[in-house]
Length: 423
Ligand code: C5P
Image (cartoon, rainbow, N blue to C red):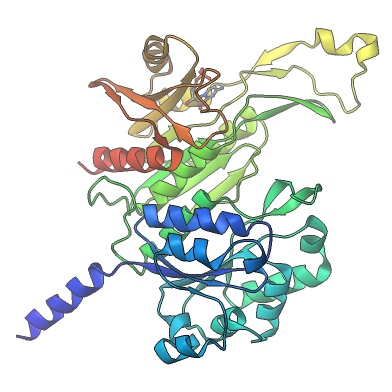
């Protein structure tokens, strides 16, 4: 009888729908929180939301409620809500509290422990982990007061995601953009993976990568010509980061060797940031051994033979005659290692024409097991976009996948890797 009771308790826990309490602060990035709700729903995560007074200047409770499928909570002194669900219960009913966008004001209040409205009261009353996605003007972000508050919040155990660097709504450039909704949703799903067993966001069965180490490269490399110029390929890094994140969600220990990108580190992933192809190769070699290597980076094939420490003058024709040296091929080097080759090596092939033929030739030339081939010709929107259409080539033939989000490609690929490494 006792055994039966234990078992039935476990079943209830495993099937609980993971949920978050999302606190939406008052900033232009509030619109991204709507996309975040949608991304979370795609991953099977339920959202209940509090919209602050400032947040309601940017988006409406109606749009938030429409997406969450629940009432959007807005005011501490809404007596009906207090009767139905007090702010204490609201703050504890979810598995995780997420503040996005976390404005400078919200961060300051949370760091001080002020409880002046429903959002800050919930933050003070919760007994659940808290994650914040700061979003504000770069000067506000860099202000010593915000940085002081940030340190206090981190010391209190609050997990910070982002901010990313880039153009800001206010016309300035720098750190302060809220992390992208897809990345955040991945980070949240990873975080919930520990407490809510149901969160396996992508199809792929119950494969478990717990004891596996997977090495992933992502982003471009920058090959400096002089202090102001470099050679690079176009690459946002989105696909590689999504793969690293999806593998971590399946329990793998992941090392992501990344070229320069504007994406925040995926949660649960060890990120090694590099600039050049040669640095990327050294970082990859240092990270071995690995059970699998996924080469997603858009590595520059060539680098200037000599890097100068002064700006090359175009008037003297300096730029037209720069000798180039070939960069090491990281994928080929690791796929052809005699000792310590990862058992599964996956390369990528971004092609603009004759995709399959070029990709299959590349698989043979590089010596990798699988090639993930995609069409990046103009008009496909793959470069820098959120969607991708891929074909996986292996010695078993080809497998075409529908057009889907890069995060979905990542999830499906992670599941395929898991199946291969664990069967
Ligand atoms: O030769 P190509 O650049 O098209 O090959 C693409 C594949 O090879 C990708 O998996 C990419 O990450 C990898 N690659 C590499 N090192 C290079 C060039 C490409 O790892 N120098």
